[in-house]
Image (cartoon, rainbow, N blue to C red; front, top):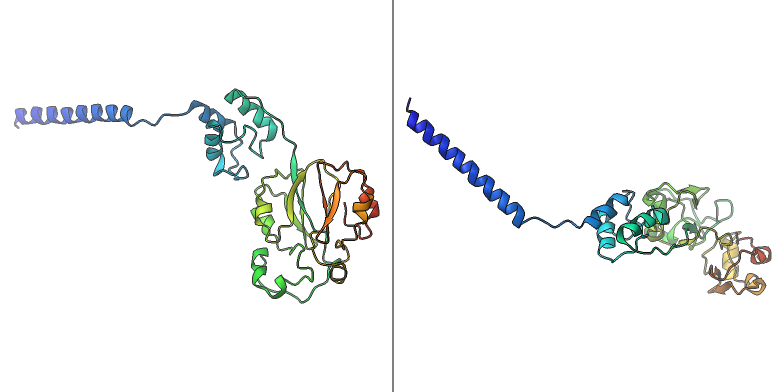
Length: 263
């Protein structure tokens, strides 16, 4: 056994190990990525749903945007103002409370209330109806298709299809806006949570066409517009719209509507 060779090999291995260790240590310091402590703290405060409702790619993206001052401290729709206050403290900012919102489906044309042109059998997806003659089986080409594309995209289970029309659970809804973006007929909008006067129709067809297609469609008669004491409801392109900033939820328009589409 050559003792000298063993000692030389041991020294060589130790030297290589020492060199690698020093190299990695220096490289780690030189190539280290600086961590924004505020971003880390903000990320820890966010609920972690990664729903994308804030408009950023998950909670990591939201935290980075807040830390850079590119997003509001209460921009998380899931955490709301409660989480916003925590993040405001981290960022050393004042938080302006925003009104809670919820999604609302502007259609009340259930299976019993609407007419059908034919029986549809096929892929049950609202977006696929663009390839079906007439845009689907329902006679109203503006109403809810009822195949639940909004249901599938909601990360909170806040939407369900009841009797052919999508319905939102206000308590479960976080106003993330995913259903708003998904609906191919643009029937869903975000409204103030406390709002109780809502128009359940989006049809822009003329009165006669509406009445032949749906029992509860807006016919643009303007009785609601003439009755509202605050000028909060107007009829545009044969359909009533509510200005939520003016509406006091007095219910006058609801009483005046002959089609009972105002909730």
